[in-house]
Image (cartoon, rainbow, N blue to C red; front, side, top):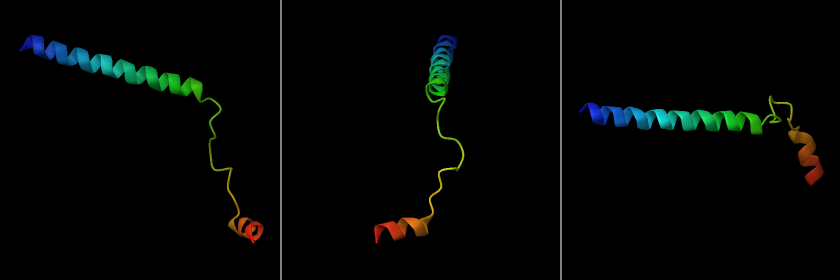
Amino acid sequence: MKTFLKVLVSIFAVFGAMVGALAIFDRFTNKNRIKGNYLECDIEEAEEEIE
């Protein structure tokens, strides 16, 4: 039983390390990601351009 628990904990540890590494990699690759809501579009102007 102890061997099974060691294997299970080891699998979870490896999985957690992989998720953490992916999160750090994503953080560094998307430094210039758009933040906030500053790309708002005025719907009335957009409808006038279509017509």
